[in-house]
Length: 260
DNA sequence: AATCGACCCAACCGCCTGAGT
DNA sequence: GACTCAGGCGGTTGGGTCGAT
Image (cartoon, rainbow, N blue to C red; front, side):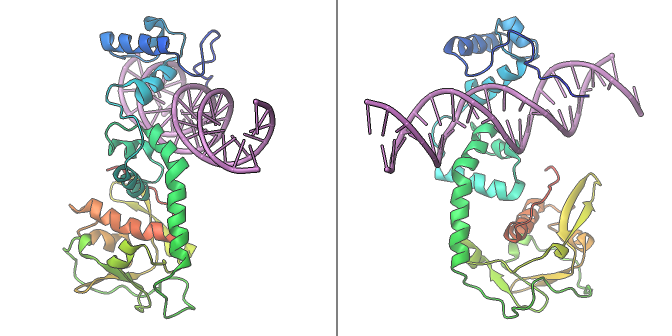
């Protein structure tokens, strides 16, 4: 069964809002609150559907809406959050007070996507790191080690490598945006159900190693991942996800995140 | 000045989810 | 459990604007 559009009723107005309509909506909500959006237009005397009223209020009329261009700080946050969350505009908007999901979505599609693309193009055109083993297109599979569970936060990790140490990417390289990601093919990823069984996440299906100057950790599955403090059970969940996202983003894969 | 294409952004649409019955 | 409904979300659209020709 397909539900009829909420504005299908004859006589309901569509398109741009007039100043009078805006004023009517503002004064009604200031007096009575929005309560039931569906009932609101009738009560307020507007020839609009509730959905349209809600959208107009949330995206434009709400008193705390910040207008004007996005600052570079805001753009950076959007880019970072988009790396982390994907197209979850409302979640991104939650990190930017006064900005709406719609606005962020528009900015992303009109400015930031291009900006990012340019940055990636630039990065790919000037590789700083080369693999020593050019034949290897995926990270190398191996047996898991019996390394003890790690209590180190993922923020300690400054680099990662494959099992043969063919590629070593350091955090300063990541900062400088002059690296290329070693190629990773489809078989690298597997779908894993995590912890609460309500979320699915793409995880590396092969065993591989994460290391920094002091530690080297091997992961064979989501379970070994969870043994570490940046797993879902740990207090450093966000750090852990940042870490994984660095990898996911660089591999060009998308990821479905659990809520947090 | 007129035309055209690219870009921007407000608004709409359809789908999903959760609450209520 | 099945159904309905409202709210919320992300994708898409289309009208306005602006710069190039």
